[in-house]
Image 1 (spheres, rainbow, N blue to C red):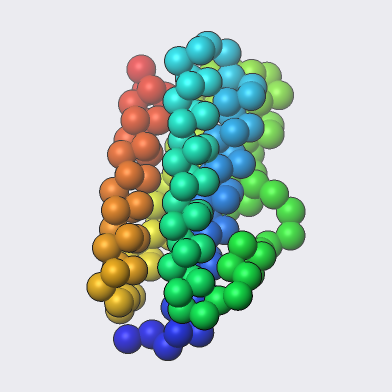
Image 2 (cartoon, rainbow, N blue to C red):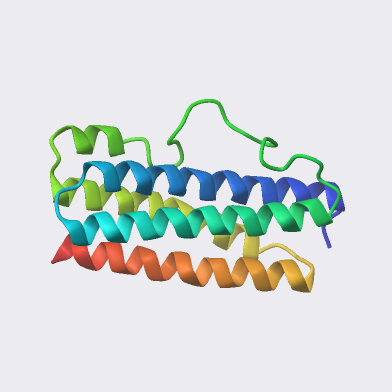
Length: 147
């Protein structure tokens, strides 16, 4: 089992991953054409904000005093979301969906890496629930991209 310090670091990494997704989906929603995709991306952004809050609560429970700032990486939209700004320049729906899928690929990988570790039962359950939702979002975005 991980030490509390290692577990806090793991949770902080997932918090940053969720924040990246939240910002990436919000950027996509602001720049995509069509109400359906705007709605989907806004819902995904809100979902990631919810996940961030849940992870922050778990980190607080482990003694992390300020998880929302811990393990923060300078700059925005990294880890898979970096090319979204390029895709929205042309407002190409397929390119935006492809970049959202790439961001989700990164999030799925981060969650799988976390789930490969030994985690306390309550944290494992939280991470598994969030992972399942992220996989579902990934698959939905991929299906829309391929449509």
